[in-house]
Image 1 (spheres, rainbow, N blue to C red):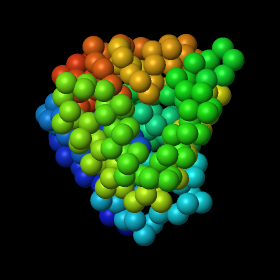
Image 2 (image 1 turned 180 degrees about the vertical axis):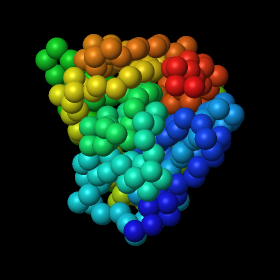
Image 3 (image 1 turned 135 degrees about the horizontal axis):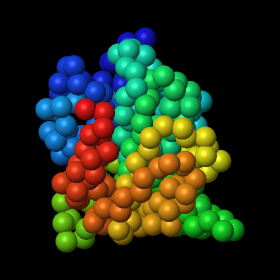
Image 4 (image 1 turned 90 degrees about the horizontal axis):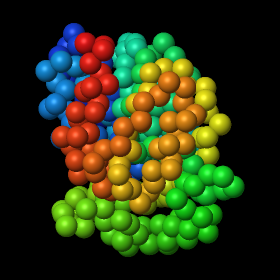
Length: 267
């Protein structure tokens, strides 16, 4: 198995620098980090990749059995770290990748030394004493709409997820990214993303962790950031002056500054 080809792995930056792995969320690919990479390459070795089924990954390597749980995506991360012999990396995960990184750190603790969770959510569905932002009926309707008309769902949901209606080009970019994903693969990834409950795993996180939330996020409300922060021992919570669910695109300077502040002790 050629992991570098399978996951379209790209390595850039300072060859001898501390390693930062940037991981995209549902319906996206490594291009989501294009405004972050230039801020890091002078001091860090930056690793980018696409999960199997996303971007320019090898679609023939995708299987519903493997990627119907977050553990399958976490194994992609572990495979990449082993292929490149990476140790004690800082894993920066956007959205669902925040939970994927947490699972990868549990599976291969020698590989991941710290976590940056960008707009994370361990559970999207409200329950007693917990606000995830959606009712179970909301998620059922979202998934039914996605499965019946994926292109229509993408066009409608991308601007909601991105926020920033005064900058429609951002929503259009996200919609185009969604539409570039095979609908059958997107269906499985969406169900995995929106139906997984990772809350019980949070207290087991033992590495330095930065949680970046947005001041206004329709997908991961601020109650979620507070919840994650309260349950990951010693974590740091930063509220970015950003709207929407993709601050690395809508507010890259603030996002990059927060990540670099967290990375500085490892320089």
